[in-house]
Image 1 (cartoon, helix red, strand yellow):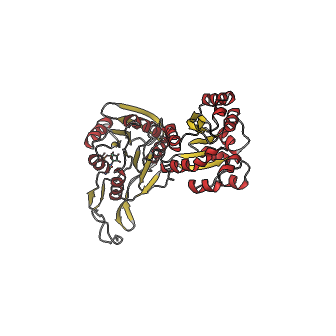
Image 2 (cartoon, helix red, strand yellow):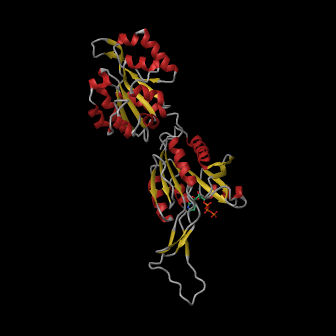
Image 3 (cartoon, helix red, strand yellow):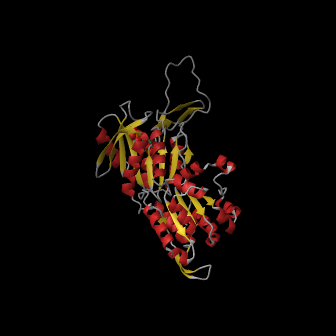
Amino acid sequence: MTQTLQNKRLLLGITGGIAAYKSPDIVRRLRDAGAEVRVIMTRGATEFITPLTLQAVSANRVHTDLLDVDAEAAMGHIELARWADAIIVAPATADALSRFAQGRADDLLTTLLRASDAPVLVAPAMNQAMWRDPATQDNSKILLQRGYQFVGPAEGAQACGDIGAGRMSEPLAIVDAATALFEQQLLTGQHVVITAGPTRERIDPVRYLSNFSSGKMGFALAEAAVEAGAKVTLIAGPVSLPTPDRVERIDVISATDMLAAAELSAASASVFIAAAAVADFRPRAAAEQKIKKTSDIETMRIDLVKNPDILRSIAESKRSLYCVGFAAETENLLAHARAKLAQKSLNMIVMNDVSRSDIGFAADDNEVVVITSEHAIHLEKTKKRHLARRLIQLISEQVGPGNRA
Ligand code: CTP
């Protein structure tokens, strides 16, 4: 099944209605679609189904109380509110809709709704007369105006024997509606592979050739791509940076290792961004023992051979990939960058001037020109994190949400 909710963190609120017996199925399907799910149950919900069942299907502890010291110590309610990418309430009873509309904050679920900025999806479930009741209708309108999204209620036979609109939508329809919450995200459904940092080429057991790349730009891009909804694989050379949240990181040392990791990951990817500063050459053979300095030599030679061009090799082997390169230049900036765009069969190249010490390599800031076959866009000097967001935005405009891997 396609992982339409890959990486997504969802809070499922369950309120006290008979449709709660379907909630474990919703959890299972959300997880099948790739989401991590945490469940919150109101007291009424626990009368219909046990927290243990929901704990088993969600693989996470179920939260039931606002004032639970143990639960607060593990993940406090504000932390839970921040954690969520979206909140789904299914089933949402007539009483729940009324309490949400009033802005109550007297139990865990209502408090979380107050504390979170995440989108909210509700799946009403009640007797058809209760759904038609003017107060319920008014409450629903208030919630719609506040940006809550609704799925259902569906029409049909009800647990109480009535027929009409009020049944909770089927779990599959709820999962589809949850997926739709994220569809406006720029890179939903895309797998982005990013290389970052330097590579290290072994001379002997204690020495290597490398460069000053810090990996900051590649790591910032990984973070921005996750924020934009993508699944992200970050292939990192030796750097001392923490792994951004929800990013799959593969650590490598040499250019040869980086190429092998890139080939594996690119097979399922739709976007490849080469932000690594790959060493262009490596010693022909790494010495097995430490090279000793003997008294009779004043100079030494290390025979170097060319490393594979990772970006070029990936771009040429998978034409459907959207490939982005970086061009670190010191002179004839645009001309050199444009030449690389063509030589490496790229869709986009991000050019930066490495002769300046205030931007590039180890600096926190960068200033670049983004070049495609159609345009050259200058992005002003700013923090690498901001620049990364702009770059991801420009890339997503090119690959578009319809163009899934
Ligand atoms: N690159 C790569 N593998 C290499 C060398 C470079 O994947 N062996 C990628 C870099 O990650 C970058 C782009 O190619 O995205 C351009 O790298 P750069 O060092 O600017 O250019 P080179 O191709 O090495 O050319 P030159 O050294 O002549 O500037």
